[in-house]
Image (tube, rainbow, N blue to C red):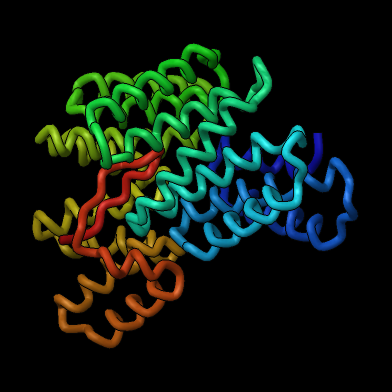
Length: 332
């Protein structure tokens, strides 16, 4: 096992961003020094995946755009029958879906579905990549709001159930697949089923020691319980995830504190997430500073957020539902 694989596996287990940063540095060095070979074709795939992970942690859209560019170049330069092609298409589809979450550009989502469908169709039988591809495809259909919404959600749940059936309970991707399935059920209005699936995902991630997925799942549980009106339970889950270092949960908890008028604690959570580089927290902290009349600091946070994620600032007044592990909410 390579140093990069060790770092990435440890990051998925612990969520220690230092391991993620180190793996990105090594992969960037690999791209800069590699010569054409079957091994070199995998580097852009792995680097784009790591950049996407960092985007999910910080909200810095530059990481997402870099990942998209790497995969677009890989798709254009690799032959159609290259064994890496399904992974390239799946990675690009997943990144475009992330960008859709930011911008609402339906063209990105529709193209993501096309790429993910091609990746699923061309992935070899019994490939370990297949469950993740089907999970992302199901998640994309759950996001699709054009055409027949009910049919899109049924298709989403079908793909996600297939992905789950192909995945061992103790597999690293099992909690994420269950989380996507939970979100699809929530979109269909089956909130109780969604909560049960997230609780199952949480139990698996705890058993496996995957703290990163555990934090994501706790945050999503908080969102769904909040929507169900169980605010005390929602706060408890947000607090557990935030105390475990999950930035999106810090934002959610800060929103709840702000809604209750507990602005000192709201500021503390927004500031902690913002200083970790999370752009939604920067926006919310700027709003809080503006409300308090501290306009110079408010402007500084707005500018910093804009430099990392322009779309975040453009939509700060719109709370969002969880998406494939993301559960951040912004202050109205």
